Length: 68
Image (cartoon, rainbow, N blue to C red):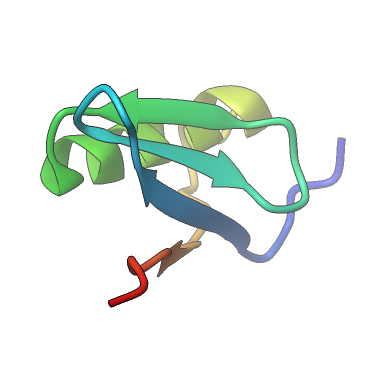
């Protein structure tokens, strides 16, 4: 599998608490209790999905903000 130049994720607040993240173009999903945890989990999920332990793939994150 060819490694992408960047992987984009959307992070949303989970109804049961915490956050979940999904990649926009790849079947990669993760979650975490805090945004810091979700950021670490995203990088780990990308590394595992693309077997990129020797070279990190950049990640772009978008947040869904609640409507006020």
